Length: 175
Image (cartoon, rainbow, N blue to C red):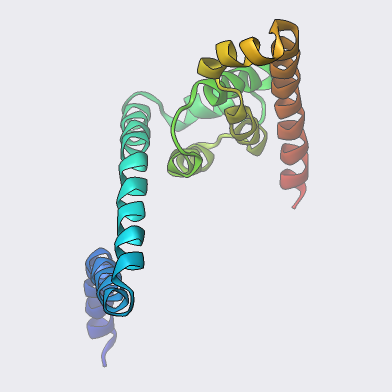
């Protein structure tokens, strides 16, 4: 096969990958349905429920990516979240982590894009760690544990996330 023919074949394969994946999953479900219809239907229902759960967060992340692509240029991202962003970069990453919603893996494409544009490993790690603070759960936590406990836990979680971010940044920059 010539080099030109190989390139055409690779382009065709890349174009058909999503369709091939869906076809493969369909065939697997069909085969498993023949073996165990009840378990296969349960698995299919669970898969559909998961797809439903991640659709909204994925749309939100996609919306943010479009906004970011439209309004922010790489030099601004480096200034806001880069290695020399300092306290403001950590503060912004911490606040974004606290207020981010949805499943974590829905955020990975956005974080990858930020990293490619110059965001530091430290600020990205700070964002990821601060996702454990959920403002909408604070009233419930206060009713169970009291306000002092919740305030201290939230404060230490945020400070710990910044410390982890700094550690990850220091380690990842050297390797």
